[in-house]
Structure formats: structure tokens, C-alpha cells
Length: 337
Image 1: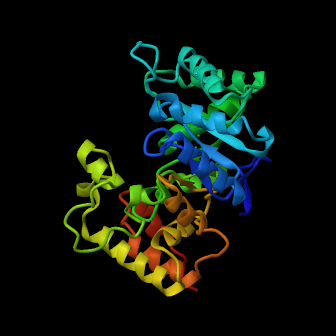
Image 2: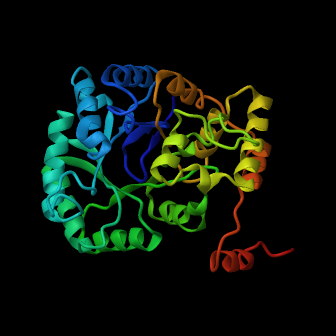
């Protein structure tokens, strides 16, 4: 596995990040340990979790696994923002909740420091300078090495960067957004912003909950039982069947499977390779429920799609941007010689 710098920092991370959202939920502790062992054996060093994943159980599992390893060999990322209890201050990005959250995460992870501490989503109820000033103090104290964001709008990212720059505070290092062949709105503005400001990008759901895994084909009327999409449909999650059961999705999957068959790879491997090597991307976050899925995902490294194959996938998954991106895009077209 290759390694890439995280944004403009000197921190190197593996080109795939192992997501731990399934730990303690779909995967028990023994299975989670086995997947982390396999990921590490393949050269993986980057593991992402969050305090709310299985209400802290994911962090605890990662921590118990990490206890038997050389800590400096791994980059451990976690997040804070969403509710961890019923108290009115047990949610959000206030100084109180962040400070309580980081101490709880450090305890569950069994470590003295967190490599990458990320705010899980924008908090409209807390002044941004309160959040940024608190995160800056955690870096100064050595409890956190780098800070990141997830699920922010472009103007929110830029506002945070400018405010940190103005105060001389630690700046955000990376963004963790939704990005895959079916969800490409990030390209309208946010990827350009991250490249310009030196933020790494570590996309979540690069297979969109399994839609791009190869198990869904044109003509299916419902998702198979015991799948992420079946669960999403039942619980009303964003990747549910009704949200993606449309002609564009099936056209993307048709092309994805076609390319995969041509080069002898799985559909999931092709979809991950497309994300991994897209402009601005540092490391997609793979989230496996079992060892079979993980082994397949690990097969996405060590090779690359051809320019022609990427073009076909780009064309099949293209979406028409709204105003003003469409208007500006037409004006930005190269002038004829």
C-alpha cells in the first residue's frame, strides 16, 4: 500500500483508511480485531472511528486492539459532535462538549493523544470561534495532533480557515465528506476549495453503502435481505432504496460492472480505485462488515484505471450542476485557438 501526505502537513497516511463504524455492531470484537490485523498486514496505518459509533464501543474496540501495537505506527482518527447522552450539553461543538468528548475518547481509545480529531458536522448553535479556539487549545496541550472537519458546506470550510488564520490558531487539516460515483456534488466547489487551501480529503461511503459493490444490478426490485441498503430502507437512512433506484444509478452500475469485467477486478475495487485516484483525494474510508468484504476492498490498491476507463465512468456518473456552477463552467471553457 502506498502512503500520502494528509493535506499540507508532514503526516503520512495509507492510501486507504479503515472505517470502524461497523465495529461492535455488524462486526463483533473478534471479527473487528481480525479486520484490523489484515488491514495492518496489507500496510494500512490509518483508522477512523467516532465517539457515536455504537455509542463508544467502536472506540473501545480500536483501543483494545491498539494496546497490543506500537502506537506510533498508526494514525487514529475520531470525531465529536453528536449526542452521547441525554444531557442538554452532551451534543454540539461547545467548549464544554468538546472537552468532555476528547477526554472520553482518549479513555476509550486507551491512548494519550488522538492523531486526527474531527468535528462530525457543522453546529449552528455554537459560535465558530468557540469551537476553533477549543480545538486549538487541544493541539497546544498535545492531546490532539491534527484537526479536521466532516459534513461542512464550502462557505463554512472557508470561514473556519479564515478565522483560524486571523487568530493564528491551528487550522483544519482535512475534510471527511460523502463522495463516490453516485454522489459527485463535491466537485462543484468543495474539492477545488480543499486543493486551494491544502486540505486532504478522506471520503466516507465510497461504495455508498454497497450500491457500488456489484451486488445490485439493473432489474432488481428490492435490495436483498441482510444488506446495508435493506437496513437503510427500513430505517430511513440516506442511502435507502428509493433514493438511488433510478436510471442514473443503473447506468453507473452498468458501466462499473462492464469496466470491472474487462480488467478482471470486482465492481467494488473499480469504484474504490476511481475515488482513490480522483483529484484532491487522500484516502477513501472503507467500511467492511466482515473479512470477505475487507479483502475485496484491499484489492483496490496496487493498480490504476486507464484514462479511457476513468472517462467512461465519469461520463456515466456525470450530473448537471445547478446555477451558478453551470453558468460559470460554460464561461470557463477553453477558448478556441
